[in-house]
Image: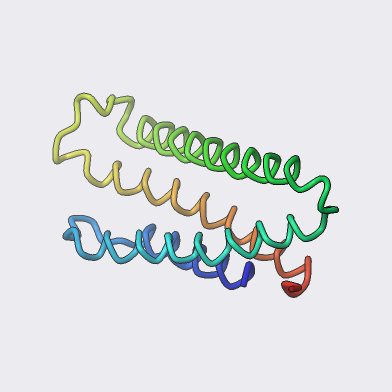
Length: 139
């Protein structure tokens, strides 16, 4: 299930990167929902695998470590995506800040968004490979 979840997340991030400029809210919603499904498919079995790999007496510590790693990963991922988006937008817009955004900057905005989503997709692809190499989920 972990591998499938990472695969779904990878697909969702690629689909977000390919989102057409000026798309309505519905295509955004279903792509984000797909990312949520992928995350859900990955998280629960991954936590279960981590918890079943430690002795019962150490599960409290393991639970804290799993939660810390998950939260740290989310925070770093969001920060990196934001940094990639900001850096690419600055480069593609000729140094214009987002506070000065107007419709003429839409192509730069979309391209910067694509870079951020593709970086996330690469990360998900690495996670997919690692989950696959770990082997099947054990009960």
